[in-house]
Length: 165
Image (cartoon, rainbow, N blue to C red):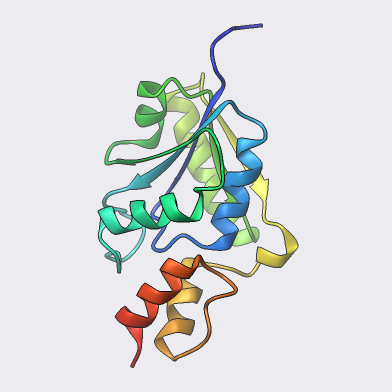
């Protein structure tokens, strides 16, 4: 066995981080020596972010402050390239539904071609978070719904400030 620390990367746009994200990060931290929560600066897959990068990083730091061995950082390269530069053994993502699986299956195949030494691991969403998404939380907040059960209190406050109609 290697004396090297086992490092995992949990990438995402985290716009904003939800309790479902925190659940996946927490469970990943139980399996690895260090978890890098990697916040993509400009996602190609999603619309422009509601919150700027520095604020998303601050939200993640607040939501994960109870966890040890977590590091939050931004990236703007291929995720496998970022993981390689960080010495990560794995890229870990959460899966909620079949639609998540279809996208992640495709990305896994591309990533394996780029960096076969970096594993892609998937953690199934806990039942209480299987419906939860950042976009759903933003929509709920837009129409005045209570998002406090789904996000950190700092995120809930900022969503109300940004999205209240």
